[in-house]
Length: 362
Image 1 (cartoon, rainbow, N blue to C red):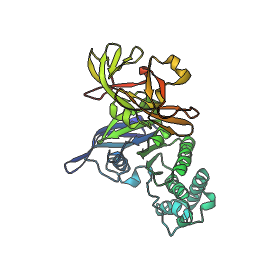
Image 2 (cartoon, rainbow, N blue to C red):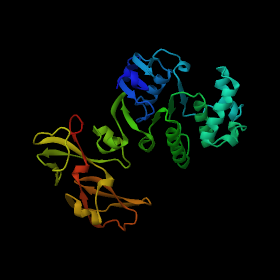
Image 3 (cartoon, rainbow, N blue to C red):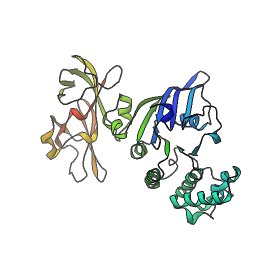
Image 4 (cartoon, rainbow, N blue to C red):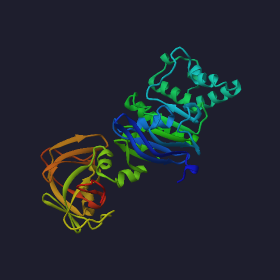
């Protein structure tokens, strides 16, 4: 993709605070109308990158292009973006309508146009009955809708979201997550969304950029990130519960870990290793087979149940495998007891194998 046909383009971006490098040689092109999520743990640089795109921080080096225009040194108001912060940042003395119109009135937008934009935003966000209320009379979810509405009335091409749901309770987060997805489907604007919550990332994103130490570790669709993580960090970060990792060696068509030889005949290697290559295999809890599914398992072994954790729709089983703790999922209706001996199946073709030293996918 070139700068000209990307909605937002980040080129060779660096940002340092003194000797500390916060962003390092970042390159990222975001397609027009795409919902891109910047995902990572605290301190990885995701919010910093968003603030550089918004113009709230100046880069040390590199360029930011929005809609084919170099905005690296442009003021935030000149970038054609709308931003929603983690804190609602509403004016408490103003009504909802006042909060929505404040920026437009300062920009001297005609009154008829202001009325049209506010009516459209209120309808999309279903906040028409709240327009005469003040923020103090609103719930957390309603306040966040108003904060989104304040960005929406700007009628821009690119929206930036900085962890907008993190202050809400779990149910409200799930509800607003759906609303944000519907909002994107209706508007088809470019949206860049920062979060540390992998569930938000997986459910909202067209593509996810997983960050660590100011660098993008992998950029791909949710299916690519989940199914074929490019390195051990991404594999460990995505999935709840996360993968269980075993160190061993790849020897031809077999992965040898302590006491087990896992057949690799169906595994799709990115880079086929030589005989005896030290490697790490990651197995997701949901990919372990039990019961009737065992018939299709290339590898089977017996385990003793250490702990049963019912979770409603499924049950999480804790045990030991190859000398270390291991966990896997079973159907929620399964009847399993502590101390029970059961057979499980593993399909190494669904696992992820990484070079022991570089931690890159094999």
